[in-house]
Image (tube, rainbow, N blue to C red; front, top):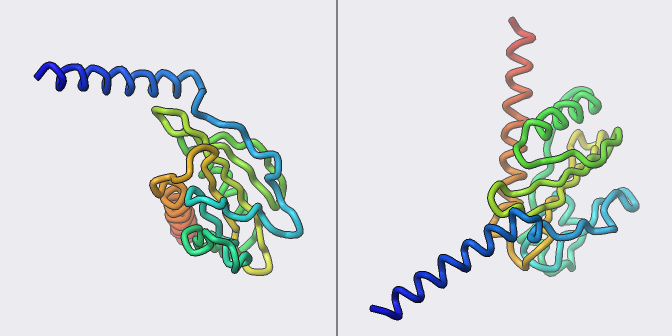
Length: 172
């Protein structure tokens, strides 16, 4: 019984330590220096299962291609308006800070609420295909428990809802 109590206390202390480390910014990691657009592409997915990319198919021999593959964000109409809608969504997303804002490229840093883990999220406008490519990657760890995929799917769903709401407003 005494061992169980000591184990519970140690687990509580460890959890508190991790929480405090996150609050102090010790779990945010360092931003990669090679982000951005290179030869019309975003950075390839990470070598570990902690990132997703709508351009993963461009790297057929990449060991994490199947895990990382995610659909880009499709849009109709004016590409600039699509980027403006995406910026508005990102600005309303808790924990996300828009770092770089260019006409065809966006870079945001998104932090988790409690532990402040930071992920780097990039967007690249492809007007010829009427899509916005996306890459979301964790800075720390070798896995992300599906958080990056979930973020991208959530943004895509919110983007589509925002477009539908805008269209309904114009019909009135």
